[in-house]
Length: 148
View 1 (tube, rainbow, N blue to C red):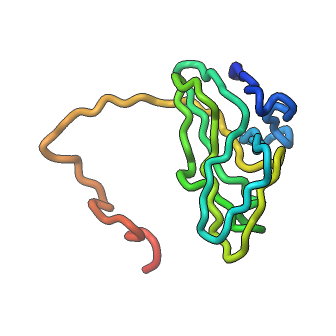
View 2: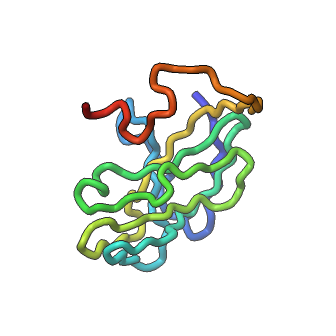
């Protein structure tokens, strides 16, 4: 198990720490640390604070992902999904929510708004070449292996 230091900020001090909702869940649920409800109209987006700052160990990131229930039932997603919190970032974790539905949606204090997945990161060394090795797929993309 990887340990992550968590700092509760003043505006999130009364909210529970993120938690896994089941024994096999991959993500910790993040809550809205807002003072007043925020209503997102259709196609609106808002930066929602969580009231938390974290210190990830080197070699890890936190991925901020949408909650499937909010997405399926209300069209609420995370604009930059998955958002990345780098190991050296020490500011507040915030979530950029977007309303992709045709109806307004109101976010309330303490509501679970996103999930955070802590994952290892592999760093790569880029090596410039003049030609790439051939594959059966080649440069085909954007559905080239899909429908026939």
